[in-house]
Image (cartoon, rainbow, N blue to C red; front, top):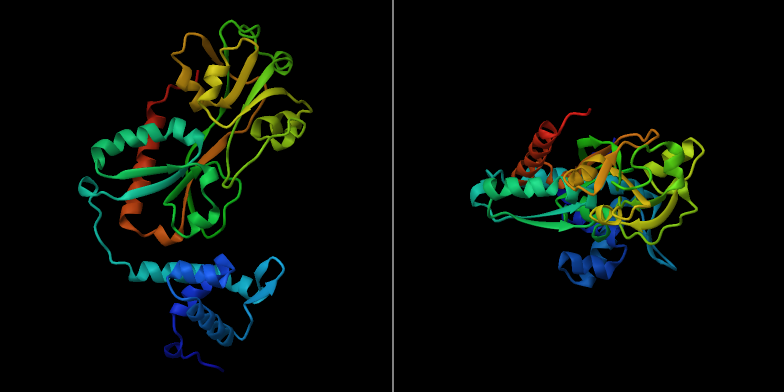
Length: 322
């Protein structure tokens, strides 16, 4: 039985390996760590000896991880996260005197519904705290995993297993249309399908580009629900901003189908009606996700708890369904 002598291992090498597997480039990894390229190259040499594997090999598209490196990557990320939490000094977070900057990736949906209430709560709870809101297109899963972004608040289809996540709330869908729309009196499925529609959505992380109206099943919850009953709506406007449908729905021939909490923002608009869709659309979850590196951080934990408190208070104050 071989016994590992951890005294002989430079634990900084594990940090080197983590950055190398992320950057897949010795020069960029060295710049990230603030060391020289020769020092990084020497670190890679020592890592190859330690694991008895090349770890990274050259290819036409750059350096590619070996099978052994791919197996190590998630274990390494978990180990470094555990070490970070172990060595992090436990300091009490004082919101009233803090000037910390929190970077939050929030979807346009979250910005339209949750964020205004969060900002209002922060003005009294932590007036010195600074919030930096980023869009999904600004952020990668890697940014979130490395703790460069504190939180992501969005509708997630798939998240790496290493992330922590919690549901903020569930939401349904409603239709927004002009009070003088030809369908204002009765929004049947037949009427719905004969209308022109506004599509609005932006989920996920990374840059999205262009939409294809012919690929209805790939357009999200609403169009997937229609596809399940063998139907398809006629989309004439695509937008990624939830502020747009209220303005666009002032056109009498347009209908916007959007999350109910966004539609309710127009409840006082005398020109618009909020109506239930004439077919079943499943509810969706708004979730909050964060890196394991930040999970035990006192300030981070306080922010997560505040967001959940604000969300629960919003749910309590909502009008009951008729």
